[in-house]
Image 1 (cartoon, helix red, strand yellow):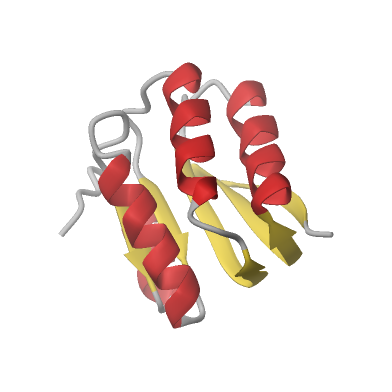
Image 2 (image 1 turned 90 degrees about the horizontal axis):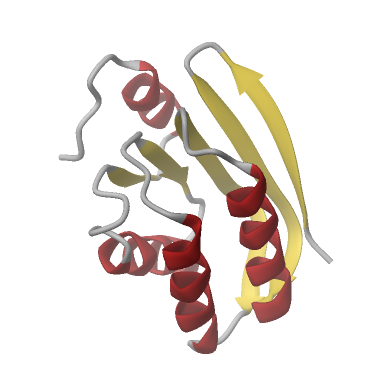
Length: 125
């Protein structure tokens, strides 16, 4: 089962997903984050240590329902991925949630992700 660790940084908070996640695990992790979070700062989701091979297409509907209930987020979100499956998952989610969270960017390079999320007025490219 996967877990999420939280690290506070100057200007943003980092959530590191580690371990194996299935549909329920992904949904529970984001539900916990989104209900506890007030969306008052930039976020950096590090998905490089997570295994999402067990998720199905059902998870996108679950996440969008959760996301809609959590409210809008006007702060930037950087998502770091390490493989093609996670890249596709992250890009799909960013496209689906663009109306609620317009500034999401998916990265494959940690330094680029940190530089973007740390910058003032980061905007998706």
